[in-house]
Image (cartoon, rainbow, N blue to C red; front, side, top):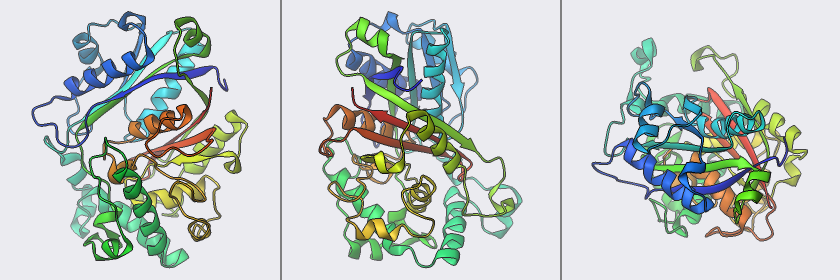
Length: 375
């Protein structure tokens, strides 16, 4: 399926605070913008895949959204792998198109935890709350602590990741947080749950994003101006809760990436730019190693080779990622990958021809990978 499907259009809302906006309203705005970007009519869309809103789960949400948009898609539904849902939905759309189940699919998500409810991120986790585990960040902190136990202090790596994301976000007019970060500022930021500081943690954001997926042939027939080929995708899932895992520093990201690389016929050395799910800096570090960009515990070499800023060894999260652009989980990373492949990013990587995107959900429970190329 390498290159058979393309992302034909992208759209999003403003990121940050959207008081009074429902997730349906936000989804509609992003979808409208994505369809307009593709240069097609709404009636060409016959597939609709939606990520369930994390902050307020609703039954039959896909049908509710389709009705609000005046659509009757023949293929679609709601998907939930947490933050990994977005790339997985793009993969499902591509496979549905290949199977003849639909021709043009919208993939979309919206959420409003900043002005609505953030209970999903703050809730207690079963009996472990008796020992102080009362939020998502506590789970990632436990993983980060074990990683440091095995591989030593990683504060330099975490700081490099955070500073690169914030630098790129500062140059992005759509970013929620446009404030560059120095090492002194990083070291002075307060602990949230040790060893994670405030600047290791993603934003909490309202907003929506959407993409239009169709076959490369369909894009040509419809006269789509800037389709971006999907070269590979994959996913990996761990059903084991964090305290029960044999190794807290192992995830299914490697399985996901190997599947995507095999489909694309590429290897890590062939990747020009990366958009890596950065809910926390430890997530980025572990994902890059699992993807094969560095041996486990050896990511510091990439930092020494120029780091993660544009012009460095591996340009990372060039729109700011979850740490700076928006904490809205995941699909915005795909949008930036598309912009890089079109050549129109606010932090464009010169002559970039390949981009890898990661999504992750839960506390490293789910993972999905997408590889994009140039037309």
